[in-house]
Length: 275
Image (cartoon, one colour):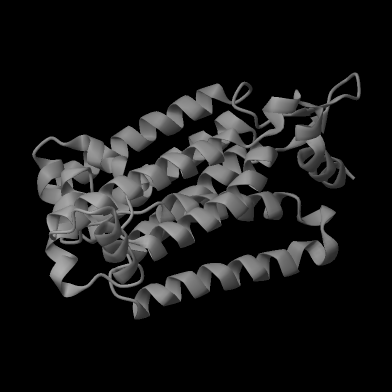
């Protein structure tokens, strides 16, 4: 009974908010910033290879939309590193912002297109479910942890992309399903099997497709599961029989603070291992 009430209230709670507050603005801001940033870096890469007119830049972007051509590979790497890609050597030199900026950088049109499509589909739903601040909290922390995982386990890889944070959202949603499994048909088994299939398909693709950072994906997924367990919406009745979300950040701020401190300690440990 509690699981069903919590599940129903979690799905419908956003409808009680003011109109503008119903919009998943966190998802849309991340999507817009990432897309604009990609447009800027894509133009920079095109210009670095000798394309200066609008038509030449567009042609260069389209020619490299799916797979970067050998003639553009060096220029792409240089531009991505210049604007914040994960590069272990530069991070160890003190450029710690590179543990965050890769989330907003993408290699080509296919990369940005797939990531932003996944983010919009999953993010708009989860932001309604978790609320704006909790959604951004989970997205950014799992994204940072995904980059830390890549830093430790793939030190030679120049890494960019939002996929680690998107895997974090998948992990958080998986725990929402687990917590509310009694409210779902067949104990949520079908939903969980579908999530396992999607995760397995994406991780499997990483072993086949070149330049896919599966360590970042796994780091995001595992940290998303942990944060989902701690912060997934969980509605319980008060003495007045009103349902309140006992896992919201306002109620769990000490745990949220400890989570941030734990992430900082994880970063420090990774930097020590890197040295």
